[in-house]
Amino acid sequence: MKRLVFFCYLLTIFCCNSLFAASPYDNPDTIFVARDGTGQFRTIGEAIEVCRAFMDYHKVIFIKCGTYKEKLVVPSWVQNIELLGEDREKTIITYDDHANILMEPSPLATNAAPMKLGTFRTYTLKVEGSDITLRNLTVENNAARLGQAVALHTLGDRIRVIGCRLIGHQDTVYTGTAHTRVYFQDCYICGTTDFIFGPSTAWFEQCEIHSLANSYITAASTPQDVAYGYVFNHCRLTAEEGINRVYLGRPWRPYAHTLFMNCELGNHILPAGWENWRNPDNEKTARYSEYGNTGPGADTTNRVAWSHQLSKREAQAITPAVIFRDDSSWLP
Image (cartoon, rainbow, N blue to C red):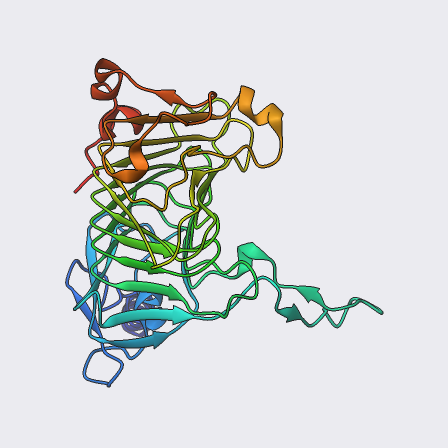
């Protein structure tokens, strides 16, 4: 009898260990995604799904060339992963939602009319987790110009976007959470209106910012208690042929902060530089600055009086470590 009880005890332990055994993907090894079936997964969403919650190691999801039509979320419990494309021109994550798509009402909502999708549900890729890296790939919202259409939507902290193409029309990149930090390096970002917008603190280093229409580049909504919103350093501002009336930014919220320094500004940038979003009160609070820019759009002679030109000393004091609250350990 004792021998039988002992055997049952061992069997129970074995079954429990088998049930709760670590996933074969619970390790820092790279996993591979290939649309043609030659990887471990055919979709990026499947690869994200197998990542353990709150990983304390860096895990790479290598994405082979291909077009991945996926509406993706990196959930808040996933951290320390890197989505790495094989070729930034040929590794494409794409979707086509826009704000004016009509959603069917819930079956529980009696006599409810269809609702519009709205800006914040249009993302192609939404990053809720922290310590996430996107590298060497394209994130695109290829919806027709029928309303706001977000390509990349960030919510987590310490997000790195390196060598990527971020493509859309209105509202291409939404840095969507106050007090979070996002770093862009060597990226190509294009759009029409307010195509870089939101409340996060973000540094853009050596990026090309390409305007597809006469409109506004940035629409920061920096909170009043946050010192820095968007800082563009050593970036190139370019435009499609025939585009010649582009503002550097307008304040989505009254205390919007945006700085362009050491950038090359094309002749599509208007002499006024900045716009008040049809609200003169914003001129008292918006924090718009420039320093050391070059190119035909950099002439500040006719800039709006409520923008600022930094001194050399002021500009030298602004670094990624400073704007990211004296923490640069997570930067590439």
